[in-house]
Length: 533
Image 1: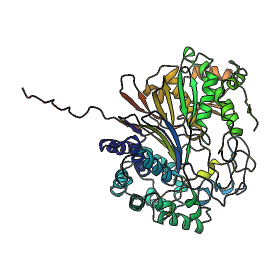
Image 2: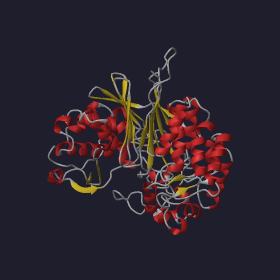
Image 3: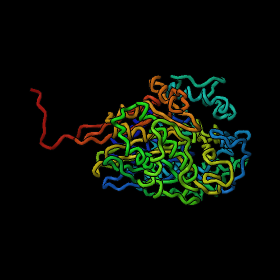
């Protein structure tokens, strides 16, 4: 089963499985294909996390997140505000658009390391679907066209992206074939030279030269020094399920477990999906987690993250005791102490290898900056840092960006039950939490769980997707929640369920171009024939 946020990427992964590859081969092929067909979301100059469960049951997390360049500093931006929701605003949007927004890329290194260590096919073969899509082109979807329209003003500032995506000054229309010749050549270089093409070769030189000429900070030394980090996942227990997710600098594993610990004492199933009580409890758990996250979750090489304390059930008891079922509260941290434009891939093979991986260039089309002659689109990961000095998430040379990515898995009695993930920046792991509650407490099917209406809360505002009834919104308002309606909270989730009979179920939701591709059946056994009678 291969589930990605674009049908052509799912097809690329399926092609690897049909060629005899495993789940990791398929996932990496899908990711490279996504860099072509979802260029607004993911790229080899981005970063991300891969949560891998091997056939023998071992779990590992490969951290290919971006890092701050060595010449970066805590005071490199002129901050404009410290208000909730505006704390990352800096003068001239230098942490959003252009070369100063670009962090050292880790995606290519992470994908190649995953393939080399856990895959079975050569990089050259895994890259073929992406190369073909870039050279021959593909048909733009309405989703891609709408993303171009939303970023048009920033894209127009870059000559290469303007030519590619804004022909004649107008956004690329749905149904138009998009050909990326320069990018195809870059992918061919990677197929020949491996990750060294970027981290010690011509693609890296092109990136460093562009940065030097345009006031960027990344140089060839930053690229040569980049390393993928391998991390042990965070684990917790919820109603008989073991929940497994990535550790810091990812927020998801720690805070999903923390929130489930808080919710475990409530009868979430009995309260009913979408009721005012269940939404209120979800909202309060979210606010508690984000209050703690602000002071405690960052790159563990720079900040001591109290993981054991955050996922301790006794700590959840302390926080839960302060929840009032009839009143919305403002929460501060119980401890001392990003952008919606990402993609996700979930793959399972017939041998028991499973990968759930979330990758991004951060904002829509990243820094809206293309490296001339290469077709590579740069990330704007520097936006994920707090531009104010002296804080857990402040900028420091070599520091990894924190992330809300949530490539999660859930096990029942030691057997894998679910693997899932989604894009959506700060809304990622709260949405993953809601999907797990949908599956475990509300007994939803996989498709229902990923598509169900979501909530999100920040800065005293409780966002509700439009499918949540007005009567429920009115009840929540009476409890003190300030309600805002949202057409979409976070992005397109995709997931795989591992059924008791050995079959797999794949699901992708309406919030992206997601597509499950499944393969079943088997090779004819010796001695079995067919009759035409």
